[in-house]
View 1 (cartoon, rainbow, N blue to C red):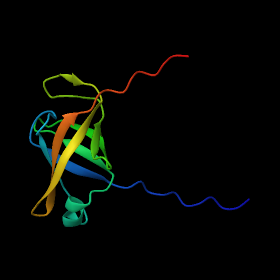
View 2: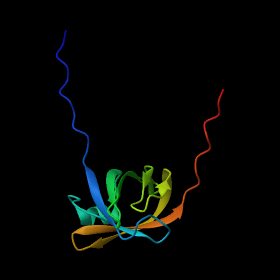
View 3: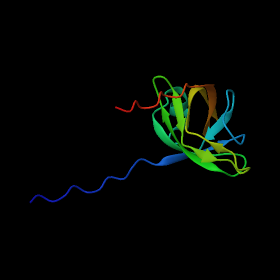
View 4: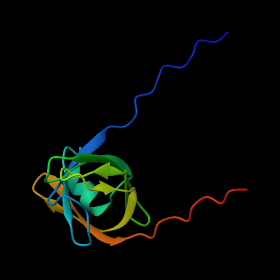
Length: 117
C-alpha cells in the first residue's frame, strides 16, 4: 500500500477589521496581514476572511473574484441580532499603507431555496 500523501494545510484566513457592527453598501473593512497588499489591491485573489466587527463579534467570510463578491456566514451581533448568511458585491479595493481597504457594494440576492424533489 503506498504511503498516504502528507496533509495539506488550508490557506490562512486573513483578518478584516470592519468599521461597523454589520455590512451595508458603502461599509469598509481593512484586510490585514496580506503578504503583498499593493498587488492584492490591484489584482485581488480569492481568500478566506475572518471579519471582526466594531461590536467585537466576528464571522467567517469568503472573498471571491470575477466578479468580486463576499459571502458572510450567519452570525449574531453583540446586541443579540441574528444575521443570516449573506452575499455582497465588493465595490473596490484600495491600498491604505500596508493594508487593503475593501468597500462593500450592493447585497446580492439570496439564492433560491433548494427544490425538494
